[in-house]
Image 1 (cartoon, rainbow, N blue to C red):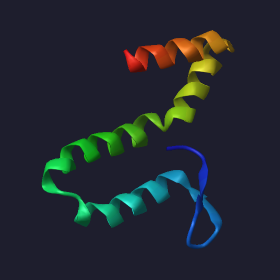
Image 2 (cartoon, rainbow, N blue to C red):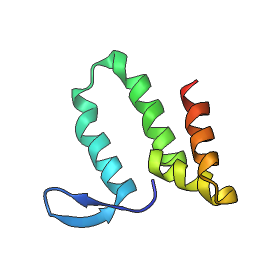
Image 3 (cartoon, rainbow, N blue to C red):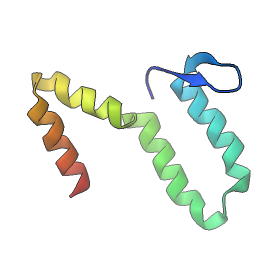
Amino acid sequence: MKGQSIDLPSGRLQPAGLLLEQLWNTALPALPSDDLDIAETVRQRLAGQGNGADRQRAAYRHRHSHHDVVDRLIQQTV
């Protein structure tokens, strides 16, 4: 993930990818074994493609069109 996010314990901005890894490391021991595959898939997608806002900005940058953003959202939900 790109950009920064607020680290709640410190109240400071931190790289979003770092916070995602910290969350993963904290949550992993508590996840039921049958949830590990889906959690790993989501984690890899976030690390590689970013979150929804990252994907929407990328779609907009392609042609500076809001229609592209909506089309991308439709493709992802169908």
